[in-house]
Image 1 (cartoon, helix red, strand yellow):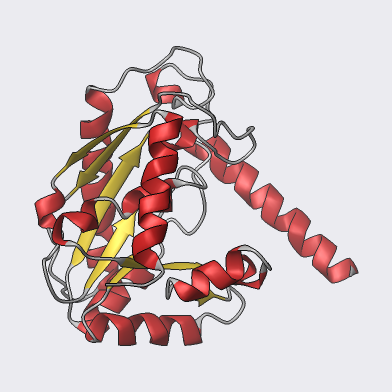
Image 2: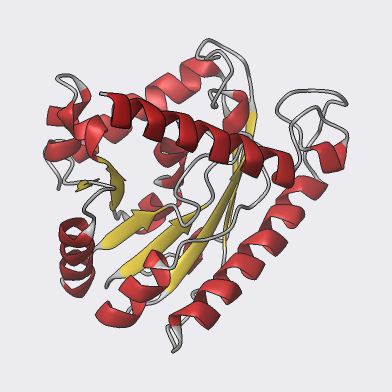
Length: 247
């Protein structure tokens, strides 16, 4: 038993119940009962990593998430993240975190990654980085795709938190394992197309509000299109780079 992770999950479940979150989980048997695997998750909100761990509990397993270094530097979240054995990622020098993730995979752990790297403002699947595929290849483990829908309603980029009792439905779909193969670019492309299909699948039975900020433009919402969101991300990155150069 994990002395910290186990009670943290219990606390999280209590919080979810108080919030009235209504989870629908499918495909959880696709999480391997033993052995390493890359858990690839779409990224629509700040809380979706807390929901992504739920399917792993079917086999009483834990996911070690790769998260930005700033979360570990925080005086409150840092000690928690380290005690849960998550993996810090320094985006300016990611080689160490990559090696650590591969080592964890080879030792039989589940490592959670966001192939999109950042939250998708459009709530569509963004372009993927190749890290998930490369780690799976080097460690010789499968990739397990997970799509979460509804997390963006709780807390997402550019909108206020909704952490009270909202009774928000959240759908979690776990796809079949994708065995690694060369080249990494082709494996990344397959992962991307698989997760796009999974997203469409979970959206079919989900109630969407016309004009709502958390609903993709494709489904009648007011979220930016993928192209518009990409332009916003590029502008934000350029602004941050300019501030760093001035500092």
